[in-house]
Amino acid sequence: MGGVVVPRVEKFKYLESIVEERGDIDEDISHRIRVEWQKWKKAFEVLWDKRIPLKLKGRVYRMVVQPALLYGAECWPIKKIQVQSHMVAEMRMIRWMCGYTRLGRIRNMVIRERVGVAPLEDKLRKTRLRWFGHDKRRSVSAPVRRCEVIHILDYRRGRERSKMSWNMVIRSDMKSLGLTEDTLQGRNIWRSKIKTVDHR
Image (tube, rainbow, N blue to C red; front, top):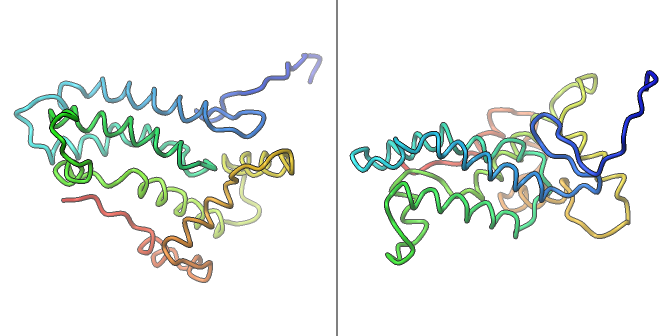
């Protein structure tokens, strides 16, 4: 390209996401978890301070730390085991924020309610469906975006091996919420259907 040899690679970083040749997302997920821990450590003094109310800590977590984990998640053809790895990392942070250990035998849902943080699985679903609605409503002449790289990898993979594709994940999300594409064009209606409420 322009007299320069462009090396072939198995993965590369694009818009802060790791794109792998075979369409896998394991590396990207690991990268996002590492970034989330970095953000958590930067906010450590606030999140660890026992004088600060749990609800306020939860708000700081949602605004500062959680976005680092969810960045790029709208494009992931994610599997249940990968969602679980995300949830394990997040619950470790939330438990440390509250000063709880697993020996206390306090259920994750109870802890989430105390800090006001919705289940990560719901957040991931909302992120995907919000992007799906935006993607379907946008003009066909709009610039290429991050998710389209994932679509291309899905198509190139073909019948190489059976994998979960992004479209399959979206269809599963819509089915779980009882949604159809008929409501896509109404932006406000669509967002109200996929809304995830953090505990107050």
